[in-house]
Length: 169
Image 1 (cartoon, helix red, strand yellow):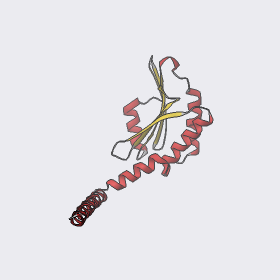
Image 2 (cartoon, rainbow, N blue to C red):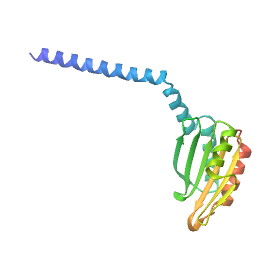
Image 3 (spheres, rainbow, N blue to C red):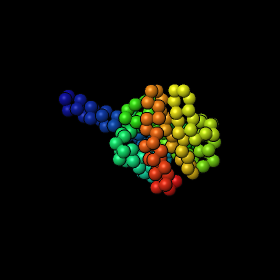
């Protein structure tokens, strides 16, 4: 009786395992068919250091690190049209942050940045200041607010101009 029970249990476990594997394989095939795997791979490569975006992100972090200004709280978002944005707080302060927007082409960058920030390179209100640097399909943005508005303006200006000069985008 125990042998029958053990054999039955083994068969049930094997069937469940095979069924789970089959379900996993089907999910992967659907992702390949829908190009989801391709998109996920591109986003992962762009945000983890592969390709142009990763190189630019690494250079951005190194440049700020060389000036003893740590970038923290990294986030990124993609808009579904191939454009991707990255954001870092400066020294963990949400009132001081930089954004890197990588667009599919220069025309898209110009249109989107004008839509978001207007056509100025510097946007200032009583409580905030935003500096906008654009080159080809990349926009680098520094925003600061509160009592330390503009605290890192000089360093950010140097870093952004240096990145634009060094990077080929």
